[in-house]
Amino acid sequence: MSVSSFKSAHQLITGKGAAQELAEQLSKLGVENPFIVTDKGVSSSGTLTVITDQLSENSYAIYDNISPEPEVSVVQACVDAFQQGRHDGVVAVGGGSAMDTAKCVAVMAEHTGDLESLFGENAVSQRSIPLIAIPTTAGTGSEVTNIAILSDPEAQIKRGIVSDFLLPDVAIVSPEMTLSCPRGVTAASGVDALVHAVEAYLSNFSSPITDALAIKAMTLIIHALPKAFSEPQNLQAREDMATGSLLAGLAFGNAGVGAVHALAYPLGGRYHIPHGVSNALLLPYVMEYNKPVCLERFYDIAQAFGEPVHTLTKSQAADQVTCRLRKLCNDVEIPKNLSELNIPKGDINQMAEEAFNVKRLLRNNPRALTLGDITAIYQAAF
Image 1 (tube, helix red, strand yellow):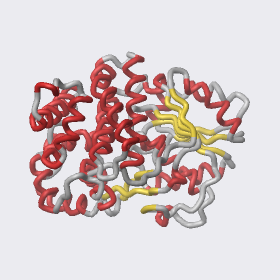
Image 2: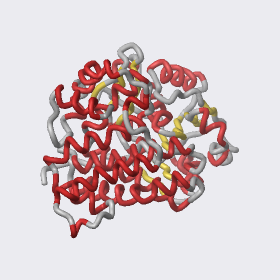
Image 3: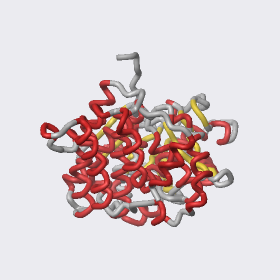
Image 4: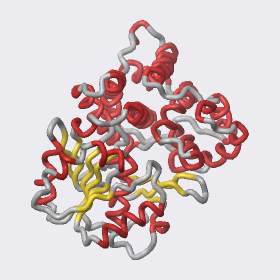
């Protein structure tokens, strides 16, 4: 085992009813005028009443003008609203877009430069604004990671800010907050969480700690997602998904993700395909590519999925993994190929070049990819 460090939100509060702890946590952090960052889907669903009912003794503002793939301009407008309201803390309530935006607001509130200067790794120098993250999807895992992903509309790519200052002070993961999540979002975000677990387990930078988290996350998600999708009010399925997503976030937040995410970036940046859908669609195709170099790990994944591995060779078990992934995506109605998303096949070469430049993620992948390999995966995915 090589030396590794482990990062997370400073405090995790989980389980049924956990969202009711918000007021106490705000008090502990000294926040009197919180700024709630969410999106219109959450604000119109009634989910926010769980939050606002606790703030009768606080002044607060709700900012819900967050787009599904937030751009720099969206973040800047949110920062402006935070500063104008003289707020002293940020509460993210939503999916990855709301949480990533909120992370940026918390660090930008005192940053003298522009947001552009923070892209890349470890460019953020400080954060003193308290930050609490409450996910309403299961999910992106953004509540426990040090990453914020934004869209660059001019370059038509997605870019990341990576810094430990983005780690929330408190992550509150409560299954009740996901009950109003639409079926399509439940499916895409759920498979996204599974991608996080699988890629973390296969990562070149995995550790025994991230391995244990990833395996448990896979075991929960593979069984709970079909139930959460078909029975949206099934609180046990929602809780298993919330826990699985959290565990997957902790795993990939430390081990990293790989080629699935790298190849998904152009789909989000260029065609505005939701992040979860992009990852879910590409997952089986990238796993087929990775399979030959990590049969042992695929065998472990098959076991986590509940496959009868004692009757299978390692190669057969690996085949079962990709079959099970395809079946899961089909069961929760994820598009099967890129042509269903109306992506021009003539754009493959440009997409491949963009994905090939996402070195931060490709270095984590267990099998190295050339530009030609990436092109071939995109071609197979059509």
